[in-house]
Length: 123
Image 1 (cartoon, helix red, strand yellow):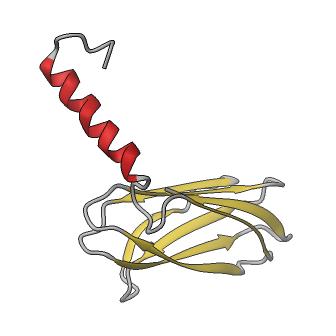
Image 2: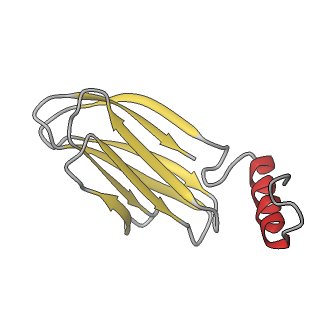
């Protein structure tokens, strides 16, 4: 707010950010989430069921600890694909704005030959 000075537009943005911070969550029910787990190699997958709030920006990040090629898929409650990251990378990121409150399926697929420990973050 200090940096915005008397600029009404910047003050408006600052107030919006302040409300989001006070709400304690941006996307996932219950606030940010974290998990550390293993996904086996040869196209095996790990599955999560995470609730997200309608109209709030939702983010999911995955990082492999040992450089395995991980893919990330997000599906709605009816298994319609919402977003995916299938790049050849040891990290993956998806973001979306849900149209309704509900549970979303997160799938982490390991395309490497060996198992990988990974970290998953949701907002």
